[in-house]
Length: 457
Image 1: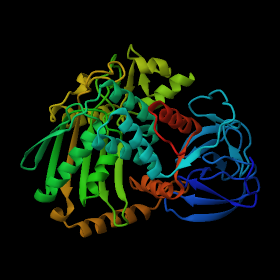
Image 2 (image 1 turned 180 degrees about the vertical axis):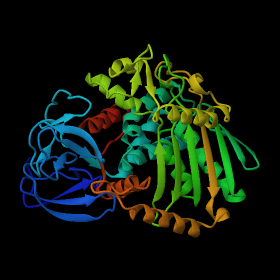
Image 3 (image 1 turned 90 degrees about the vertical axis):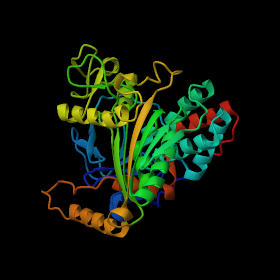
Image 4 (image 1 turned 60 degrees about the vertical axis):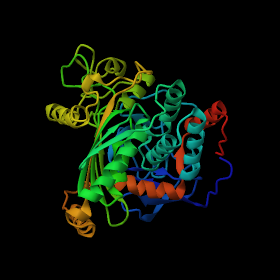
């Protein structure tokens, strides 16, 4: 790699204290000294580790010796297994690691990931959406959401969604409409009128926060919406107004109970958010399936097997075949209790809102021109009305301190409060810019050419 300074310090992010690899934040040359940014605390620490070879930005570097057959740990979980001995400072990639799911064919030499500042990326997305015919408010809402997904590390709801949304907007499958709001006391009903789900949900989040500021608490019931991205975005949007927020949604159907021969629910997400004294947020955000459908789609494309316990085939039998899983059912987390939890969320998101519910929700894949009929539920509690914003933050800070001080057995990670990783990563990426793969970067150039908009990447 030309242009790398072998004497420079290499900066890498460690996402969990249990990780034995870190991700390089910029390209590193052989003989660089490795500095680690702890994504939990945000602190940097110098190491005695020397980078063994030129490594592109976004790739992994070993933090210790990893023996053949030993797990490679990232995010605090095994992501692969060493095929060969890996020395500290070595490049950790497909040449010496086997995926925990399966081993995909070794790709050609990958281009270095690119980095874009958040505001530049957002501006490009806005230009694309304007060119595709999206309204100003709807385009702004989707652009902000997609960029936030990359800032917080929720790439499954990021740029990979942009082209499909643009296709649906251009085809008229998503209406160029404004959500209609009807208020009764502290209850607001929002009819999305088949507009872009991100816009509908943003309007609902702002409306419920406005009302909660007057009344102390408010609920928004949203119908006739569409897929809205990641629920934590809307929960923190409400929480930024000095509130405790809860957001749920239903969506495309692919989840069912053990033994089911067809799906009945989506992996209905639930998010709870609140402000912290440091300006970041407590952000609990989870989908209710054991794994995301996107992971299953990716495994099917690669011809990989799934771990047991994730899915059923069309006959209701457990399967590790990703293609069979896509024709069958994904399972809820937590077995029967998890499935009961999904059913309860459907009461809020589907039944109560007056939207489509359960398997009435239309799949945008099998029937892309039909309205999805998605429903969302939002709750906002104004903290000043409740116990005072300052008091709430003090109490939440104390809870976080108590979690951090919890005695753990050797080798176990200290509990991490929800949102800590996302908001530390967001701060990091605002500083170092958003990393994009070569495929993502090329895709943006192709989209710019298709829509005849500028892309200054």
